[in-house]
Amino acid sequence: MWRKERNWKNILIAVVLVTFIVNLGFGSLWIKMMQGKAWAAFMPIRIAKNAVSLPLNTIILVIILKLPVIDRLIKKFQF
Image (cartoon, rainbow, N blue to C red; front, side, top):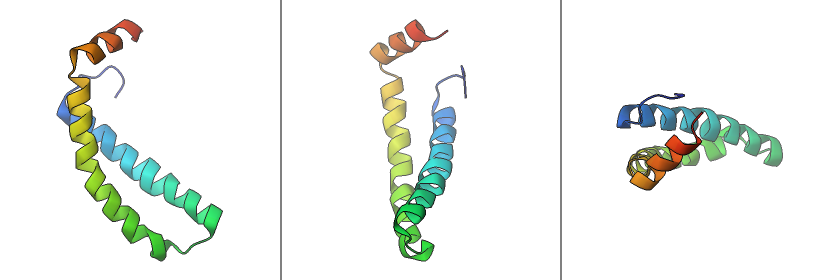
């Protein structure tokens, strides 16, 4: 998503990728490695939590990335 337009579709794609790869994938793997709990014990709760947080994260990021201050900072530090 590097240097793409910051619209709700691109933000949603980024949030979905982070949710599935990082939160559900690597985060669950880390819990399994550290605590040794069975996947079936904690995955339903993690899936429900991420299903609720996915639209919230998307809405919050759309709002934050549309702020003029954030837009100026992104343009200032973009190379």
